[in-house]
Length: 553
Image 1 (cartoon, rainbow, N blue to C red):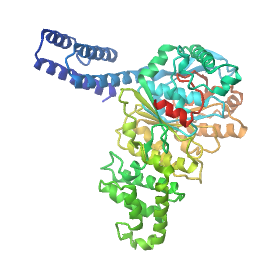
Image 2: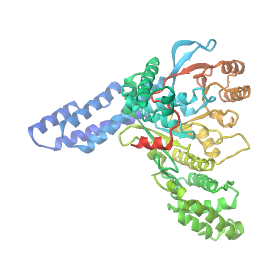
Image 3: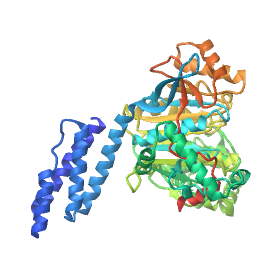
Image 4: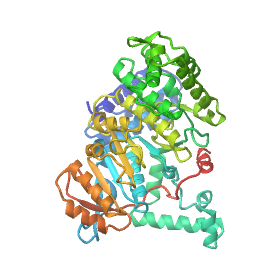
């Protein structure tokens, strides 16, 4: 059954419930008149076209709300259905999402045509490569906006801090909305006060939007349909994340899948031991085996293991042996005590307390519509973390995404997009194998079947596992700094998509201007060139923690 068919069935059930409710109630003449109007104007599902069904439901909901009949639960569920229907309509409408303007592959001159991407190809994953200043961030931000406007939720991992700009959907008619975000130093260099500089900035941004055929209506639609939530693990500046909720409780939805639970435990233990400065092989290292057994036994029984209990159980495990040997033979007590002390020192540090606060690590809840019925873009900002903390958190996050994906039914539609803005160091070539590499490989190989796409971006094309990227069906390649970088990317792109055009692509990459990208998809492997369009948020650069805190207000 398609999403549209499911939606139509639920709309039909909703209208039947409304009819049943209003037929059982009596009241004032005004009430009777309102009841009659609602009953007479309720649509019959399905109609001739999905668009007319959606319009009929929107009208019926409006009549019910205006009628004042007091059915708060039906109004709420009707609004939810309306949001879902609009999202489904958006997916259809965005099947040819405009991501830029086409350029001639020979002259690099504009052709006058739009560069459109069928967003469904992102279920086969995407790669975006370009040096600093190539326009890579603008291209990826534009893609994330189009996906979210189509009703598809986005989870964006942001090591550099650029993607918080997605929340800056400002009104160019109100220059004062720019004032908190402009750079005072830049205003001073221009000889302007901040208010005067904000007026110039707002006017320039509105002009750049208009140049790409975008206007106030597009900005309003973006604000109405999409909500950006900026998370700051390990910090209270944005929306904090209780990371240890993922370590101490079994992941939801995997109760009947012991293999998936064990894979999640393996990942969680790898992340935990990396946090205390002990990167290990989770399959052979005795420390990992002990902790995995503690968590695995508890999760299999449906129990959580609070962090304090875990630390004590590492010293005195609740089992006498591992395999055919006693626990002390596998990992002597002094070594278990040292591991427990290391974990306790991390947990007791005042700097670590923000890691224990915030929303649980629950991917299903994160990617559901927001309380206001909007499609979420969840930005996970990591710029404030050190390398060890980043590896810890990203490992936990990716394993949580893998666990969530295993609870989903199969689909050919794009259900969610996982974006990684700078993947360097997280998916390196063999023999390097950080704890993030395993879950990334799993998502690249398996997530397509359940409609979860992955978009990987980097400015360092040498430090990537191109065998892993062979699963990517869409590639965007911008300006690259060296011939070695260009050759490496061409090799990976041709291996992923085929239809060898090495010489042509290498020539294009050597001539690309700023904001221009060579792009190919598995469905259309011929090399094309685009110039990125203006995005619907103001790209002012990385946000500081103080500025991120301002977003919450």
